[in-house]
Length: 367
Ligand code: IPM
Ligand code: MG
Image 1 (cartoon, protein in one colour):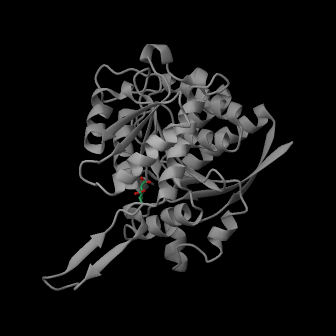
Image 2: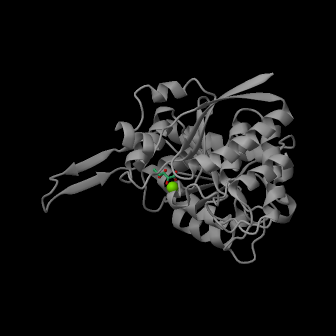
Image 3: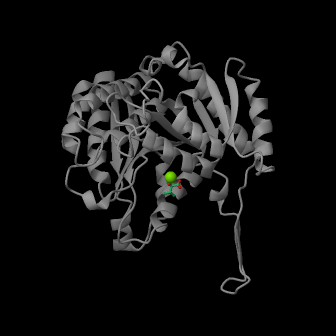
């Protein structure tokens, strides 16, 4: 029997609560689809930092390389200054493990409330591929003459052809796969015909102003596209993208964009699919160790109350299984969630009609 060795980082606040449900569902999927899970838990997060004074032990990142994937609850602690844990854990893992893809599906599940009027699940079903290794996140720049009236700060959007090309190639492959006949996820796509969708990649950029960086992106985009003749190409400026994500989300299939644009538009996308309670993401290194997480934070004020929605974490577990090659199990997780959301009153914390653990039970039994 195949065994998948996973690092588990429950993290801070409500992270451990949602992680418990994520693991419940992963175990149900393992039983049903005939694989084993070898789980190793790590206490990285705010409490550990306050106790020991170190964000991550020196060996931590190297230790993560032994695993097939990392499953993360949430990082963020009210007693720790913002930025320390995000930079020291989340961003460090992304960079050192070269998780160069941030995969963020935006999909409205049945009976989930969206703030977009008259939009149904068939209308909101696309994936954002956020470049996760470059741009303004690399820390190029600095401050000179600091503390004087003349001080100058820069933070540059840096991209290499290599970074851009691997991200674009991933996006086109994803579009191809989303529409291929033997993709077990395909049957779960909201009524594809109704939405009139074909495989399509939209480059989200700012070619009219960022004329260096997006010149590189745009040229690479159309060159890579030549290898995928069945995939349609489209281009949108980032500001217009936010407009169409609200007005015509059905236009999108795969959106690919640079790091910070992706950070911003995926929060918008998450709200349109029902909020942080249901939005999942993966930090992916297709050749290495990937890390899967709910997009939302640790919601410390709800800790221990059992009111937080575990659906985002459970869906992140589905993405994790898919990356491990367990596509059928991954599709089953999404199907089980799809069977569960119609039973819930709301996706908002405290108003679900069920406790955190009860939702985990519902999804696990649906598997
Ligand atoms: C995200 C978050 C992070 C980011 C923060 C916490 C560093 O906003 O995962 O989208 O900016 O990437
Ligand atoms: Mg963000």
